[in-house]
Image (tube, rainbow, N blue to C red; front, side, top):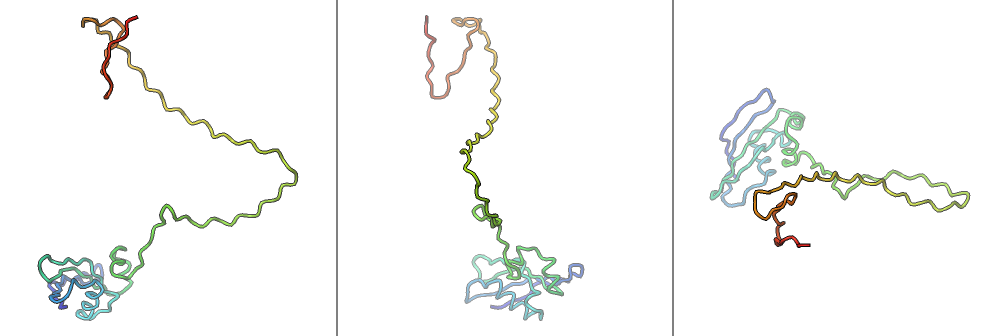
Length: 172
């Protein structure tokens, strides 16, 4: 594995040096982020805990990987400025696991319940409060179509619902 620095910039406001690098790995697979951090720390003469690999991209069809690295002046600056997921990728911070729906916090210890002194009548099962009924849709007034032959006043013409067959009203 051979690392070549393509570009170096100083960023005094963020207390770091920013590097663009290229790794040639002709005889091996794409190197791990940790291996590149180790080699880059030797190259720039900085401790490994201050070197952060921001991104690495293996180029298709070639045995080269390009990336961006940040070398901070102090390890505290590196941990306070760098985003949390980048610190996790570089192994400087543990991934915070979010409690899932199955995981629940431990239940508080319950105090012992006092024993009943006298037998009592069985408690009535409480009924849940009645659920609020959804509002009923307002009915649209039927329109009379007296202009068409065969339509009576007060009788509405409607299309049959999907899958239903149209039928004529029964004569009484």
